[in-house]
Image 1: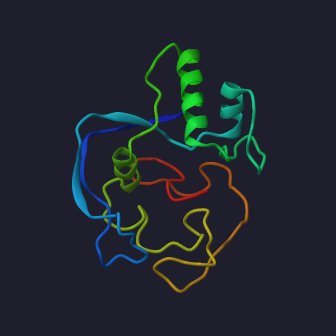
Image 2 (image 1 turned 135 degrees about the horizontal axis):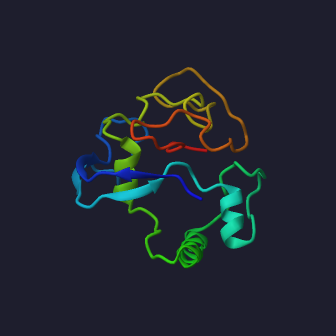
Image 3 (image 1 turned 45 degrees about the horizontal axis):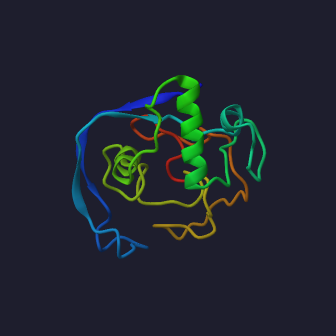
Amino acid sequence: MFDMVFIQPGTFMMGSPESEEWRESDETLHQVTITKPFYLGKYPVTQVQWETVMGNNPSHFKGENLPVGYVSWNDCQEFLKNLNQRAKTSNFRLPTEAEWEYACRAGTTTPFHFGSKLNGRQANCFGKEPYGTKRKGLFLGKTSPVGSYLPNAWGLYDMHGN
């Protein structure tokens, strides 16, 4: 039902340097070590996956291969509880913030796994306010099918927006 990617343990720099554009005060650059391997979904959870587990689809933009939207942390916890019951396991969980950033970066040190510029060509985002470039890009105004953009070096898709 879910394509999962195995993530090896490792050490990385979490946060961002003080010189980084749009940096927030709570993004202090610091070393973090992930000590245990874990699995992460290759793609965001799709609406059909959500509906199979939860029996509903709260998304505004509808489509089987679109990511589920308009879900809270509590909704995700209920999804995971139901998924674990269906799979007769307790292994499905959300990643920690450190695990997510580690997996998203995939060994890179730039703001995005694909470099230092974001304008809607590399991920589904508000390309009319580009990051790291003056070149404006796309703004679709809706979600894209999961896997529409290139994966990071570890094979994870849509880590920078959809």
